[in-house]
Every structure is written in structure tokens, then in C-alpha cells.
Length: 291
Image (cartoon, rainbow, N blue to C red; front, side, top):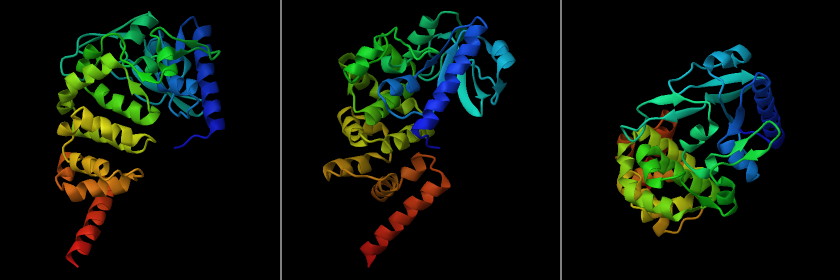
């Protein structure tokens, strides 16, 4: 579902109302994450995340829930016919599988919640009056078009390997540079991509393909040796780079990648619709070659 500008403003207004309700009940609450980042950059946004020191018992007193609470203390609420993801401030224990924390601890300190997050530009807060609160110098990184890990980049990427793909996604969306220490950590830990499940990698690649600066990420895939761990996609990505293709639709790229490496469908769990499109494009291509 795509939001127009008025719908965005209306959803933001609803989110501000949620913050006000929680604040009037004696709690803290802020909008956090991508919506704040994109608001500052004057980019469109759709999903709005809220972080608060109110716990699950408090939230269900004030709002209608439309999802079960998960183990990380986050859930979806419905307010004025709009859905919002809301989570209680938390700290996280050590990561055991390069993906999930071994434990979580709810906290009353917003700084604890901010410091567990991935990149500075994703850790900006907005209050009910649209004031931006910045504990990690994220506004400075936004101004300098820079993607920077919070605190120790080696630790951040080792903790959760999906952050590697999310870093590439941010580059495709924003056309930002990767901060030096964060880039060094990316190079060092690129092999952690093999720790990710295929569906997670596919999900991020599809998101990247639909961003304006996808080609910059294709170049980054090559430079960081990420292609080694993107089984099935490597030949398609290299073909695009070698032939200096500048306009690329998702279905064309998937079809091209499948033609060049038919193990692609075995490596990644494509839905039936995408599989059918890829096979159709490949069939047309090979039919023309035969005749």
C-alpha cells in the first residue's frame, strides 16, 4: 500500500496522539526509526514505530491490539483505523547465533533502547510536538549523507548478520556513503551473510531492487565480496555491472539471473508468481536461441 503525502501526515498525526495519550498517563513515548529518518530527509514513509517505557499490560489498557506480543516486547496496535508497531524500551544480552539476542531486559531508560539499535540514522527520536531527539549524532550523519553503526561497528555486524543486508538497503534507498569504520567492519564480517536464512536475504534483495540507487549496491556487492555469499544472484549482478545496465525492473533482473544460473530457484524461496515470471522469461529466451 502506497501512502500519499496527506495520508502520511495523517498517520504521523495519529502517532503523535498515541504519544500524547501515553505521556498523559505518566509514560515516555517517542516515534523512532525509519519514519523519523525519512521525515528529516523529506522522504516518503509508511510504517511508524513507537518506543515507550510503558509495558504490555499498560498498552493493552489504552489501545486495541491487532497482534500478539512477541518475546521482544513489541506488538501492533490499531488506533483511528491505522496500525502502529509499539515496543517497550529494552536492553539485549549477548547474541549467540549472529541473529538473535540470548536475553532481553526491559528498562526505563530510553538511552539503553537507543544504544541497542543498528545505525545512527535509524536511532533518531521524535516527540509528540515533532521535536527531534538525537543521542547518537544521527542528525550529523544525515547531514553528511553517512551510514554509521552505533558505537562499535564490529560488534553491531557480528551481533546480527541481517544488519549487513540492511546496510546495503540503506545505501540503495539513500545513496549515502558508508562511514569508514563501519565499512571496514563490513569487509571484515561479510562472510556472516552465510549465517542468514535464504528468505531473509531474498527479502532484502527484493527491497534493494526497488530502490532508486540499486546499482550502487550492486557495485558494493562486488567490492565487498558479498557476491560469494549470494548464491544464484552473483552472475546476474555481474552481468548488469559488466554491461553497464542503468535501468532494471525486478522481473527482468530475476529472469536474467535465472537464465544465467538456474540454481537460483533452489537457493531462494520465491513465491509462485515470481517463479512463474522467471520461468516464462527463461523459456522465451531459450526458445529464441533454439530457433
